[in-house]
Structures are given as C-alpha cells and as structure tokens.
Image (tube, rainbow, N blue to C red; front, top):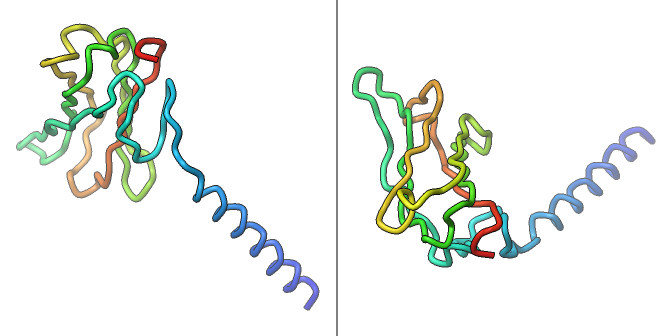
Amino acid sequence: MRRMLALLAVGALSALAIGSAAALGVNGGAIQAGEDLTLTCDPDGVQVLGWGLETDDGKVYSVRIGGISDACQGNTLFVRVTDDGLTIASGSVDPLLAAHTGAGQVVVSIPGGYSAAEINDIHVFIEGPNGS
C-alpha cells in the first residue's frame, strides 16, 4: 500500500512539473522554438514552398523553404521533420546566402527519404548573429 501511495505521489508531482513547463511562453531571440512565427531576422516568418516527392517510390527527399528575409543572410537555417513528435529527419543550410533570401529559396535534403504518410510536421528555425 505504501509503495502504491509513493508511486501516485511521484506521478502527481511529475504531472505538475510537466504541466507548468508546457505553460511557458515562447520568447524571441537569436534561436527560438515553438509555434511563434516571429523570427528576429525575419519578423513575418518563412514559408514551406513544397516537398521533393519522388514518383518512383513515393518518398519525400527534400523540402523547399522560401520567404526568408535578407536580414537572415549569414545565419544557419535548420529543418526538422517529425512523425508524432519524434524527429525522423533533419537538415540545415549554413550559411544562408543572398541566393537563398529575398525572392530566393533553399532546398533542404531529407536523407533516405520518408513516405508522406510518415511526415506529421515540420519545424524550421534560424540561428545566428545576423538580424538580432
């Protein structure tokens, strides 16, 4: 009985800790996480322009990102592709160049490729000294 009460107490404390962490807001800065579209160097955010889907095997091998502000040049763009919250692929472009910003775009490879059904979400973030 004591063991059961101890386990319940530990479970309750864990739930409180996780719940309070989930309520934390997202603050802007040189690196960000969460669903905030406001980037320090790109206040209106970036756009996913398309996926590199191969018709041979039906797998996605890349993602195209555009709408990157010129102020982000020299920073690193990171992409993380997830399935049910677990990272299945990631890639980066370092540094962002003039060809990638403004009217340009960047293609980030997804090594090995994944079926579209496996891809649940995409996270894009930009880190670096420029545009701070």
